[in-house]
Length: 117
Image 1 (tube, one colour):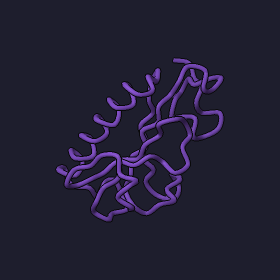
Image 2 (cartoon, helix red, strand yellow):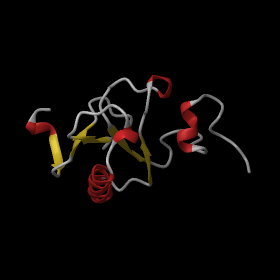
Image 3 (cartoon, one colour):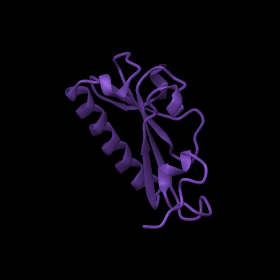
Image 4 (cartoon, rainbow, N blue to C red):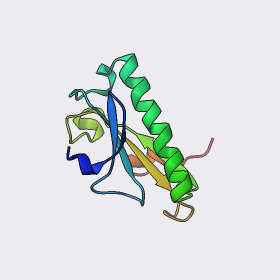
Protein backbone atom coordinates (compact mmCIF):
# COMPACT_ATOMS: atom_id res chain seq x y z
CA UNK A 1 0.00 0.00 0.00
CA UNK A 2 1.51 3.37 -0.96
CA UNK A 3 2.25 5.42 2.16
CA UNK A 4 0.41 8.45 0.76
CA UNK A 5 -2.90 6.51 0.84
CA UNK A 6 -2.64 5.75 4.57
CA UNK A 7 -4.85 8.03 6.67
CA UNK A 8 -4.04 6.53 10.08
CA UNK A 9 -2.39 3.46 11.49
CA UNK A 10 -0.87 1.55 14.35
CA UNK A 11 1.56 -1.37 14.57
CA UNK A 12 -1.01 -3.95 13.42
CA UNK A 13 -3.41 -2.14 11.07
CA UNK A 14 -3.97 0.98 8.99
CA UNK A 15 -6.78 3.05 7.47
CA UNK A 16 -7.25 4.11 3.83
CA UNK A 17 -10.06 5.69 1.84
CA UNK A 18 -11.92 3.05 -0.17
CA UNK A 19 -10.92 3.20 -3.84
CA UNK A 20 -14.55 2.51 -4.84
CA UNK A 21 -16.54 4.31 -2.12
CA UNK A 22 -20.24 3.66 -1.71
CA UNK A 23 -20.60 6.95 0.17
CA UNK A 24 -18.41 9.97 0.93
CA UNK A 25 -15.82 9.03 3.56
CA UNK A 26 -16.04 5.24 3.03
CA UNK A 27 -12.91 3.90 4.72
CA UNK A 28 -11.14 0.56 5.01
CA UNK A 29 -9.39 -0.61 8.16
CA UNK A 30 -6.80 -3.17 7.03
CA UNK A 31 -4.68 -5.63 8.98
CA UNK A 32 -0.94 -5.36 8.39
CA UNK A 33 -0.52 -9.12 8.65
CA UNK A 34 -1.55 -10.81 5.44
CA UNK A 35 -4.46 -13.05 6.36
CA UNK A 36 -7.64 -13.60 4.37
CA UNK A 37 -10.05 -14.68 7.11
CA UNK A 38 -11.25 -12.14 9.69
CA UNK A 39 -11.72 -15.00 12.16
CA UNK A 40 -8.01 -15.88 11.91
CA UNK A 41 -7.00 -12.56 13.46
CA UNK A 42 -5.55 -12.62 16.95
CA UNK A 43 -7.25 -10.84 19.85
CA UNK A 44 -4.50 -8.21 19.76
CA UNK A 45 -5.05 -7.64 16.03
CA UNK A 46 -8.80 -7.33 16.60
CA UNK A 47 -8.19 -4.69 19.27
CA UNK A 48 -5.85 -2.81 16.90
CA UNK A 49 -8.48 -2.81 14.13
CA UNK A 50 -11.17 -1.71 16.58
CA UNK A 51 -8.98 1.16 17.82
CA UNK A 52 -8.64 2.44 14.24
CA UNK A 53 -12.32 1.83 13.49
CA UNK A 54 -13.26 4.12 16.37
CA UNK A 55 -10.73 6.83 15.47
CA UNK A 56 -11.84 6.74 11.81
CA UNK A 57 -15.46 7.10 12.94
CA UNK A 58 -14.57 10.10 15.09
CA UNK A 59 -12.75 11.78 12.18
CA UNK A 60 -15.73 11.21 9.89
CA UNK A 61 -18.15 12.56 12.50
CA UNK A 62 -16.13 15.77 12.69
CA UNK A 63 -15.50 16.12 8.95
CA UNK A 64 -18.73 14.90 7.30
CA UNK A 65 -21.29 14.69 10.12
CA UNK A 66 -22.99 11.50 8.85
CA UNK A 67 -26.29 10.42 10.36
CA UNK A 68 -25.15 6.83 10.87
CA UNK A 69 -22.66 4.15 9.87
CA UNK A 70 -22.49 0.64 8.50
CA UNK A 71 -19.53 -1.49 9.58
CA UNK A 72 -18.91 -4.67 7.64
CA UNK A 73 -16.48 -7.40 6.77
CA UNK A 74 -16.77 -9.95 3.97
CA UNK A 75 -15.48 -13.41 4.88
CA UNK A 76 -15.31 -15.91 2.02
CA UNK A 77 -16.38 -15.79 -1.60
CA UNK A 78 -20.00 -16.63 -0.75
CA UNK A 79 -20.10 -13.46 1.37
CA UNK A 80 -18.68 -11.37 -1.46
CA UNK A 81 -15.01 -11.29 -0.41
CA UNK A 82 -13.00 -10.39 -3.50
CA UNK A 83 -9.78 -9.25 -1.81
CA UNK A 84 -8.03 -12.03 0.11
CA UNK A 85 -6.79 -9.73 2.87
CA UNK A 86 -8.75 -8.81 6.00
CA UNK A 87 -10.31 -5.36 5.91
CA UNK A 88 -13.28 -3.74 7.63
CA UNK A 89 -15.55 -1.32 5.81
CA UNK A 90 -16.64 1.82 7.63
CA UNK A 91 -19.41 3.36 5.55
CA UNK A 92 -20.88 6.70 6.58
CA UNK A 93 -24.62 6.90 6.01
CA UNK A 94 -26.73 9.98 5.41
CA UNK A 95 -30.47 10.51 5.73
CA UNK A 96 -31.91 10.08 2.24
CA UNK A 97 -28.92 8.25 0.73
CA UNK A 98 -31.28 5.39 -0.05
CA UNK A 99 -35.04 5.21 -0.12
CA UNK A 100 -35.46 2.47 2.49
CA UNK A 101 -32.41 1.91 4.70
CA UNK A 102 -34.41 -0.31 7.09
CA UNK A 103 -32.58 -3.58 7.61
CA UNK A 104 -29.12 -2.06 7.09
CA UNK A 105 -26.57 -4.69 6.12
CA UNK A 106 -29.35 -7.21 5.58
CA UNK A 107 -29.79 -5.41 2.24
CA UNK A 108 -26.78 -7.27 0.82
CA UNK A 109 -29.31 -9.97 -0.09
CA UNK A 110 -32.18 -8.57 -2.18
CA UNK A 111 -35.57 -8.42 -0.45
CA UNK A 112 -34.10 -9.41 2.95
CA UNK A 113 -33.46 -5.88 4.24
CA UNK A 114 -36.86 -4.45 5.06
CA UNK A 115 -38.57 -6.42 7.78
CA UNK A 116 -40.96 -5.89 10.63
CA UNK A 117 -40.65 -7.37 14.11
